[in-house]
Each structure stands twice: as C-alpha cells, then as structure tokens.
Length: 582
Image (tube, rainbow, N blue to C red; front, side):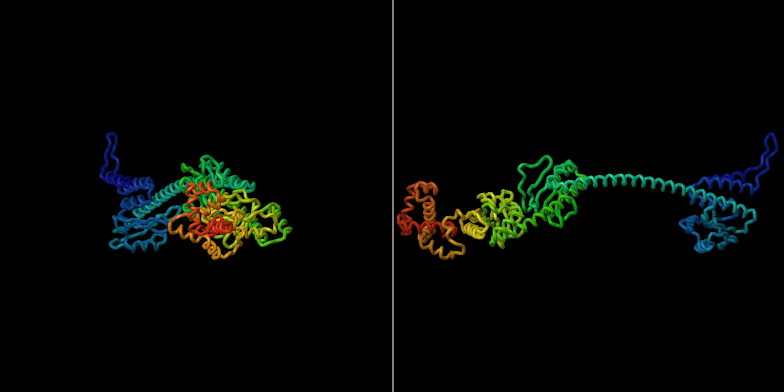
C-alpha cells in the first residue's frame, strides 16, 4: 500500500549517509524534519489516491507517527448524521472517549486518556462540513513544530475525505441516474403498453356499442367477437343449447346438453370473476343483475387466448347481457299483457274489448282458436315453466296467448296444434318426457273460450287416466268421454264396468288371459273379424274361440243390441278412464 511504501521510504532514507560524488563534494544528510515532511508527502499521495473513506482514515491512523510522537487512539466517520467509530487493532474506543467526541459537536478539544500526558480530538472538516474525528494522544507534550505537522496531516486527511466523499456521491449519483433512466425507460414502455391497451379497449368498446345499437342480437355479437379474436364464438342458453355460432368447427349435430354437467359448469363459472377456461373453451356467463341468461364462449383448442382476447370476450358478454336483459324485460311486459288477456278470455269477456286488446299485443283473435293445457310432472307451473312452454310453442310455430294456473300452463292458440310437435319440443326443453297436454275442440268465437278451456282440462284428465299417461290428447278424439262431463264419480263408472266386465276381468287376472283386451279390440275394429285378428296379432279361429269364451264367462250375448252397447261402453271406459286396469 501507499502508506507502507511511504513508511518504508522513511526508514530507507533515514539509514543513508551523505556521500560525495566523484565530481563534487558530498550532499548534506537529511534532518528528521526532512524525513517527516517527505513521509507526509508520500502519505498524502496515498490518501488522495484512495477513493474509500474508511481506507483513508485507516491510513492516517496507521501512519500518525509520520507527524510526530503520536498515537491514534480512535477514528470516527460521520455516517447518516452520527459519528461511527473505526475499530483500532480490532477494539473499539473507550466509551468515555466516544462520549467526549460527541460532546465537542464538531469542534476540536482535549481528550483525557489514561497513561497519556496529552490528548486531542481533531475534527476532520471539509467544505461541506464535518467528515469525522481523529483522536490523537502522546506520552509527551508535542512541540510547536510537531503540532504543525499534525495539523497538516489532519488537513490532508480531511481534504482526502472530501475528495472521497465527492467521488462517492458522484458514483451514487451516477448509479441513481442509471436507475432513474432504467425506471424512465420501463415507465415509457408501460405507458406505451397502457396507451395501446386503452386504444384496444376503446376500439372493442366502440365496436360492441355499435353492435348493441344496431340491434343485431346474439349473432351480431358472436360475429364481432370472432372478427376481433379469430376464434370461433358461440352463445348457449343456460341449459346448454346452442343459440348461435360464428366461425369454423361447429359440431353437426350439436351435442345434446347434460343437465347435471351443465349445472356443474355454471356453478364453477359463477364462482370465478371474469372469463373461465373449461376444457377447450374460454367462457363467461351472461348474467345481468345476477340472473344467468346464457353462456358466451370462445373455442380455443390451441390455448392462444391472451389478455386482449379475454378483454374482448368480457366486453362482448357485457354488451350481450345488456341486450338480453332488455329483451327479457320486453318479453316479461309482453308476457304480462298476454297473460292478462288470456286470463280474461278464459274467465269470459266481451268481444269488442278482447279484439282491441289482442290487436295491441299483436295477436289475431278473429281466427279459430284452440285451448291447450300443459302439465309436466317434474315442473311446477311457475313463471319459469310458463316461459319454457312459450319458447317451445314458438319453436313449433304456434301463435298463442299464454297464462298459467296453480298446476298447469294454458295456451290460447291460433292454430290446431300438431299431434306430437309441442310435446316433443317440451320434452327437449325440460329434459323429460313425463308431461301431459290436453287440447280442446275448435273455438270460433271469444265467448266459447271458457267452455273450450273445460274441454282441454277434460282431455288432460282423460290422458292422466289412460294407459299411457304422457303425451297429447285432443278432446274431439275422446269419443264416448266427450259426453261425460267433468267431475263424474269414478266409483259409479267403476261399478258400471264391474257390472258388465267383472267376470272377464277376474278371469284375466286368474289365468293371465286377455279377454277384456280382445273384446275392446273387437269393438274398436267395428266387429270385423279380420281387422280384429290382425290388430291383436292372432289367428281368426283364435278370435272366434275367445269371443265364444267371452259369451260363456260374462253371460252376455254380443248379438243382443242392448248387451253389445253396454259392453262397448264398458270397454271404452275401462280403457280410457280407468287405465285398462282390473
């Protein structure tokens, strides 16, 4: 180190003797003062060549003897407003010395150290203020020259500390500048990203706002979403049935939903905020005010969706939710108006008022109408089921007014329903075939509607008591039952059936035979042997044998007009109203 070199230089110079060159007299030998000055000069070079403040203080303390008969008792550097001692020979200064240095408050002052006759705490001050303290002691009182040398060393040390402090600050400033530049670059990049993100958000928002304003509906939303993301976009209703698909890869046919899995998916998606990935789809729920109206999804089989894709999906879902909520509100108003009119028609109302109100809701009451009663075993007749019936009726082309009662939904339909279309549509909507539909005869005037409503209820009741409880029954196809009014006592009917068919029913029960069924088939075919044998899939001779046994068992003669009529009525009631049971 420089200090060591200076120390070595001092001792080397001290050992020389004056010499005389060949060409002249000897140079005079250096005095001790010259040696001290020479070593101080070498030490000052070392001090100013060291950028580290701790190292500067160490050099000064290690070479304090260059200034005189001194010892360095302690050194302090000012760090963060406090004076921090530098250990000497691995030991910290005495607490009394540290306390005295702090009491001086930046001024020089005497210090008492045991075993030392003289002690002084010297402030290391620069232009920017106090850098620290150097505590110096001596066994004898220093001369004026030695004090001057010590003061010079203190000034050198303070100046070197000032230079080192300035260098440190420059390095810190340079580091801070680099950090600020890096931070500025990062902020600029973030700002660029935010500006781009806001631009994209504004573009998506504007596009979806235009789509909503145009009234394009679900198809327009999926078309815009597909254009923004490049991924197939689709809308399903809350039951998992496809409403619209835009883009390639649409399954054909679209898979029928599983009600249990659909509910699981909806619950899983509802627990999350925003879009959720489920298998190869990125989905979000369409749920204004918490009501789930459907699902908007992107098909992302290669996991390409980024934050912009999610943003577009969520904006699209928000736009679609507003539109569907608006449509739902309109539908609810329309449904309420339809229901009020249907309720009045079923109860009975004047034609003039009914025609005006029907025109207001867009329904033509001037044509023939049918009253349709719908009941499903797994659904209560609430608003939700009424809406389901309305959707199914619209899907099969039925123009109708809709209302509901405590246990069934009623349609006042402008056309005769198809024998199976409404039933099949409702079976798909509800996920079960356990439903019954009763249809009245045609109604040509508003005043007939209450009576036709009773007919539809009787058709529904007849279906409930038939062998096949589920399906559609038309009142004008009931035959005998049409003359039996509602509210008949089934015990009387059972007694009548028992009177005419009891022997045959008991015989069938004991012998696992089908005599009653054979007789019913015979009457259904108008007494034609060939048609009856074909319908029962038996031989003609087998039919003749059974009819003979029926005469013998029942005691009734089929050739007798009165017996034949009563037996035919009994088999009809047995089959339609009593469900063909014993």
